[in-house]
Length: 260
Length: 322
Image (cartoon, rainbow over all chains, first blue to last red; front, side, top):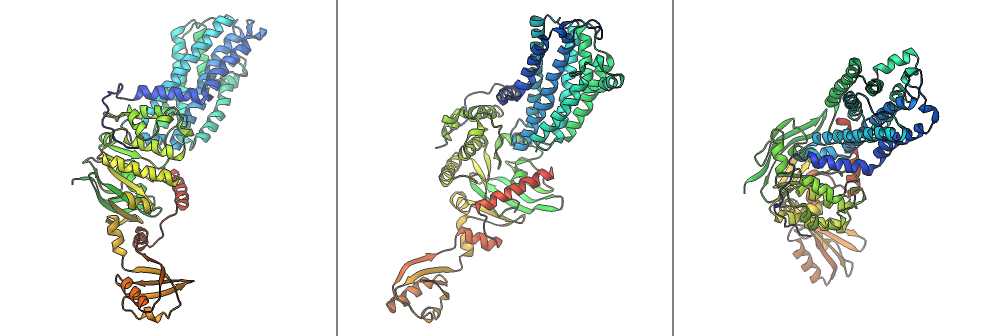
């Protein structure tokens, strides 16, 4: 073992390192398997399960003539966004901090903030792919119409992703270890999914529950997506609720986040 | 030779705990500079301030003319760092880690060549979590060198390695230095410091006790010689205690241990010869770096086990400090 290397003639492509970081983070995300299985695979499986229940394809008066399956597609999209942002993201980030990955990056020209950015980029990219997959499968296999207000739908998905990622970052900022982050993320996931209508569609909830749902990060998201599916722009308050969570929790996370 | 690192009156406390009280030293270009000291002496905090990971409460630090806090971006290009704890995701492959880290720097080393030179080529597609301790250590050295740094700080480099891996790593460090890289080596191993370092700063309770070459350090405590032998026949201690150069005679089973000054050996052997006593298994013990360390700090150097326990405790303290 002798070390004689001199400067490499090879020029590095991206000076920022963000591109390569994002590709690396995506690879790790896939290798970890938890994210792909729970955040991408499970919503698709649930779609297939719901799609094969005959009663899910009958128009219902409660939903203004929509079928239960049509109501559930946005719920499953919210499910995927929430799992990726609440379980995957904080677990990885808190784990990186715990293991000293962020600390090690502090000693390089790139710095740990860019790893955080790469994580968010990967998270959004995977979310987008999952959303498209869910919409396409629902359309092709079960004849669920694509969102009638596509731009509104995309805006709804982006606001929902920002909103949930802020919650995830807040968890990562306050949890001491990867394991704690995972536990807290999972603990938040279930009530949020309840108010997003995973067990009882929002339209069938009793009044008080429905009001709470309107104010939760995921409840607002699902309702915005439902409106866009039906051909309307998301409500102002729906976007406002999501923006408020994104802003407040995002800023709090930025203030509380420690690199080590 | 120009100074590469200058630390003047560094002070750093965590709450009421003073980690570094008053540390000053200068590292010259091209040397291997050791920072040696017992657990909790402030070694790691000192180098973390040099690396810019911690902000000193008082004092001045200059690395290649840069301020570690103010000129962080420039500093990270020129200063390679190897941290105590493993710092890569378990599922990242060796080749990927090197390619990724090389993309961070303006003028990186050729990572493939570096991987070869550190004996990691066959591990290119092995995940970090599956590497042995020695392989992880070699990878972290590779990552410290990947930006073609002028200075590398290596913290507790060989802790937890088996003796063979440790020797390989030492060879590696000497090779790195021969490339012209200045090295700061934090260690608690006497043998490592003695073998590698040109100069050593002994740090204790947050202060520099002394800075000297390994030979210079041992000379400082070389006041006494210890002569051990098994006499062929029993003899009267007075034979030796009467000698002006001898300060003490002790029996340990069959073995006699005589202490005295530099001339004691001569005096003892001639007296024994005159009395027809053969000194079997004659050994003269001189002060080692370890003796110097004990004399300077008043403590035994850590064993590796203690060091690891200390590290665990320190890790907790660090988490608490956040």
